Image (tube, rainbow, N blue to C red; front, side, top):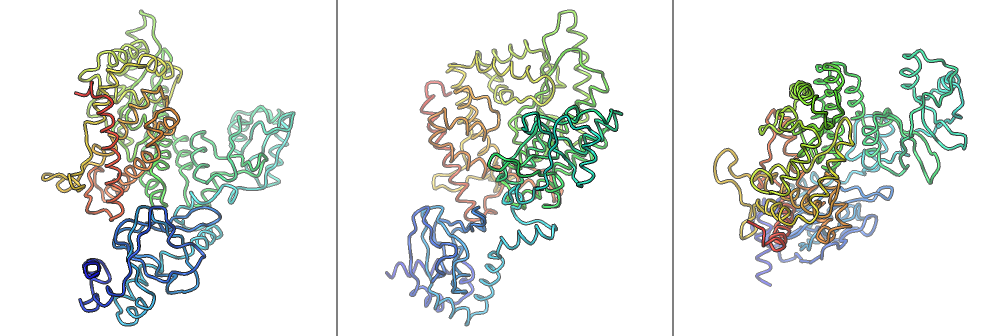
Length: 633
């Protein structure tokens, strides 16, 4: 018992606000303090239930504090070693304001309500610490969100991820038969003050949509006869979204399909329409608007200005608590749009290509995992030419790809240091040569073959004839089947970089140099997960390129992914978020973003999660070493 009290005293001396008290006071608190153990997933406090009778101080482990708002979970905070919870309901005495659940096996010290009240009345530093620390955290988020929606100003944490499309979408949906004249449709839109109409086919089923943009571009600009039926100008197929989906998903679909209106469906029936304007009113900005700016640009200078907005977009999404994967989805859509626009400029500059081609993205861009603008990693596939055309086609694409490279640079995408770009003649080849490359890398997996396969096998078509990309992917999955030697070399690559954990689970950091006391989050954490998941995907013939999409598919195909898939998803999301947050802070300070973080700048909970992530990577690497032991070199 004496030893337990001594441990409590030493612990309290190391954490605020108790560290400001003298030894005698800390001793008097310690003898009245209880200790409890809560297994992982135990709910310690329940929202709207009995108030807390104790101030809980976490000795070991961690908890998640969250609320249920409209049946959705709104995370308030994560607490770890040395942090407290239960203060607000203890003081109010009416109910618990939030749910508190152990996210790991957790040990807490419990200080009684009587002791806490005595301390607050006696020591101003105790009172000020807890009042300032907790009162703002527990503001009623539901009230805040509703207030913002009504005033339409500012933004609230996670508003894009907690607001459903039915909450802000217009219910004023008007539909018209497909044989309605354009003139009549325009009149209906004007009389009702709406920007879109749903077009129904002969069976009364939504077949398309016409918007004010359709009237401007397809009718007015083209001098079209306004007596023609609306089916001649409608956009189709109509893009739908479920009423219960969040507004963020609406943004992604608008970006993907380059549209500003979505049909909202509830229980199989039309419920409304959500527009980019609705999202602008909700949140104050929309990435869809930036994409629209990109689409209307007719010069590189205009694109440069649009691309500069990326930092603000990432910052807004980070502040709202977006997951890293959600942010990279937005970045991918915007970056793809910039690349497509520059390629279109190149076609305008040099004339239409002599043969079909496909521009492909590689590396992080190919996996849709870009954070802030990374190096150009791309290549070009073109249709196999007739022998007499080969030289003229090579000449055309050399000028074509160099133009694209130079203008991507102007938009903030630096050239690849290793010259893995379509402007390099080696990586601008007909389909038959790409198949030859791939077969050489798979059948003779030595030296640069493994390096190239790790880069090029994450390829993704962005623009042009995408059947060329699909043909090459089909060829790759065919030749790689059962190639155990090649897969063994990839396994060796996946275990090459071990996570930076020491014997006593301490972080192993750089001992000197520019990055002293830091670790490389990309090389030691993110890259091994990417390499492991790529290996699993090639083993099972998975066509996805995104790491998270690959894991989701592999959960149904690969035994290890089935067992560790959810942990891998969480680990990858966590590492990418740390990286993105770190890089954003560097960018706003005018620094060049890198991947080196000092673990001592992380919270106790972040340190623990990072160690757990590194432990998972080590475990999977050990399994690979055992599975491919005959081929590991």
